[in-house]
Structures are given as structure tokens and as C-alpha cells.
Length: 119
Image (cartoon, rainbow, N blue to C red; front, side):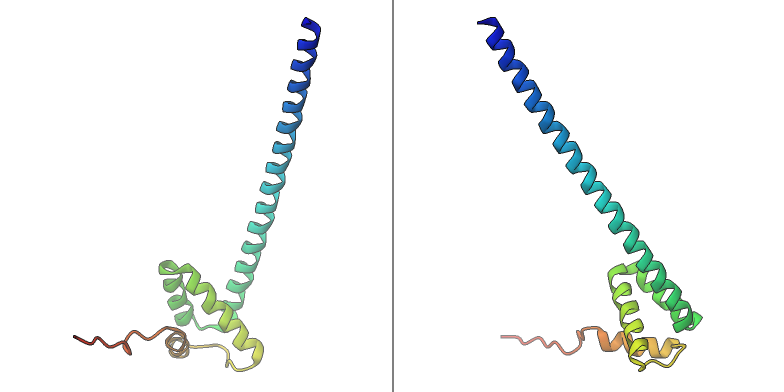
């Protein structure tokens, strides 16, 4: 009777050990995937920054840097748009600050068109 309990206890321990090993392997795989994605995002960001050095004047880069401090996601979208415009051939390089302002105003949603009606 004691030996069957010992056998059951050993079986439960072995199952728990295998479950913990599997869980650790999954966590390690998830961490590795996250590191690969972070490295890829960093590489893309660096390539965009390098492209901005050739596609924008210093004043325009300064404006874009200020935007990225306030809204990093919007700055990334603007960089993507600039690269796309350059790829299409519709962008005259280097883009100056005025042209960047025009691009920003064309991409922003106008709040001035909203009207308030009183009832």
C-alpha cells in the first residue's frame, strides 16, 4: 500500500516536472520572438532615420523630431509617407520645412470644419 502511494506521488512529481519544463520552453521561445521583433523594429527605425537625413532639410528634420517627442506614432507615419512619396517620385528632395508643413496639414484631420449647433 505504501509503495503504490509512493509510485503515484512519483508519477505526479514527474508530470509536474514535465509541465514546468514545457512552460519554461514556451516562455523562452516567446522571449526570443519578442527580441527578434524588437531588433527588426529598431532596424526599420534606423533605416527611416537614415533616409530622413537625405530626404529632409535640417529644419524639416528638426520639426519632425519635435513631432516625434510629442507623438511618436504620428512621426513614424509621417516618415513612412515621406519615404512612399520619394518612392513614387512625387517628392522633390530635399523636402524643406514648408513642404513638410503642407504634408502635415494634408494628413491632419481638420478640427476647424466642425460646427456646434445650439438647440
